Image 1 (cartoon, rainbow, N blue to C red):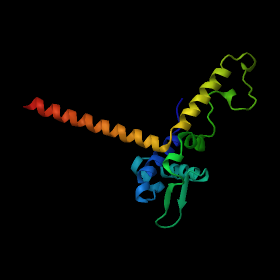
Image 2 (spheres, rainbow, N blue to C red):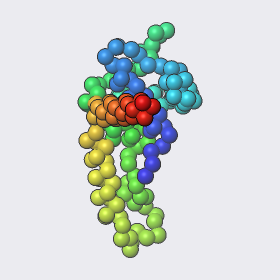
Image 3 (cartoon, one colour):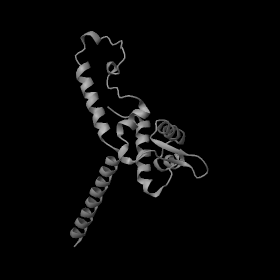
Image 4 (cartoon, rainbow, N blue to C red):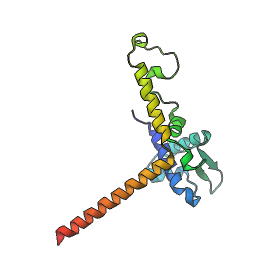
Length: 159
């Protein structure tokens, strides 16, 4: 399973806003598009969708922009994903609608895939934006410590 580009852009935007929340900085579609090399029109549409879904607040005006609508621990990844792409749907027959699949009557994966889909949704639901930020910071700490170890190793080899 792979998230759409729009979901990736939404996650980038949400993480960026979560990072700036303590500074009361508003984030614009233009700044995100420039910083992450994303088409501005697409980023603008993603931010508008997140705002309509209640995940962001939009501030109008010259110094306007976007900010998170709720605390970082009250926004989960499932909300972000579904606000952009709609409900999770791993196979065509697990969306609650009557499907026209040729295998419907003899299908042997419908129920197991529903379980997988439900468990994946629960996993995304259990990861808050705060969790994502914490994991990202821990990863950066690990990267910095790895780089420091390599620097120490390099200086030891030179001696």
